[in-house]
Image (cartoon, rainbow, N blue to C red; front, top):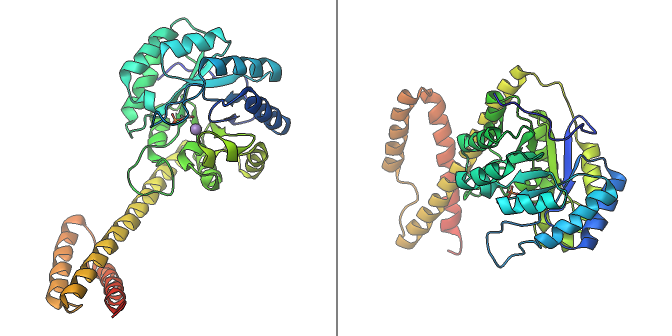
Length: 356
Ligand code: PEP
Ligand code: MN
């Protein structure tokens, strides 16, 4: 159990709302974004990257110190607390000198206990709030370990940010949400508020609403969303940044509920597993059909017959034998295999007939 205090004094709404650009690009961009965002929407924190951890050094990595001065002005002019990403004791010190007191630890930093410890050590005695993004790898203990490091440094204003996990698999999302991980964090540590970052999970604005809504159904305590006054001109994460208008439209359309019980969370956790497994089934079938296409090309080249009945019988037997051990009804499995086989035959037929 962590001794947690709220990261913002009093949220303006039931859910902590954090919005702002991926990164500070210029003073004008910050003024334009903050003024039009705050004219339309109530937010608790204005987010903005200053030092950006990019995969390639050839990408825009932020203006660092210069951007801190711009943000200091935003904070004063618009009376909105600003939060930024920090990845070192140096970042923390410079940000504190500019009056910034709320931070997030990025996914590429949480993954490294040396870096987290160094920031936690530098945080001792500071009056700050820290939000910890999940590590890029799906490792819940590593995520919790980062909380332990800050808790030992006596930082109590803590929150988690769920931003999804890196994946090499084909996915409609930029980062795989793996919802069962934040749900497990909630089960183990209900005291830690969890903020969802649908922008970095989705990677594309067209999926942000569905990811944000799912997070709210799963009782997320807040949302962090990237907003840029002119997303098309953004120097990073162009596809996922919303305009201030799109942001307010999203907030109007989302359903914010606050009645989730622990039992609901258990049921949702099980449903999450089903969702993940169904997606896995779909990906496996897709891989299977890729191999079928290769087989068809081979048979075509060698002029072989399409259906080799012994091979099919063998395959079916192997699968039916596994069924017993896996507690799956054989009649059911045979039906599934027949449907898959039929589809494979049709696919091969189509390929063999092509250009012949
Ligand atoms: C960000 O929020 O701008 C960011 C870099 O996030 P992450 O650490 O989740 O990639
Ligand atoms: Mn970003």
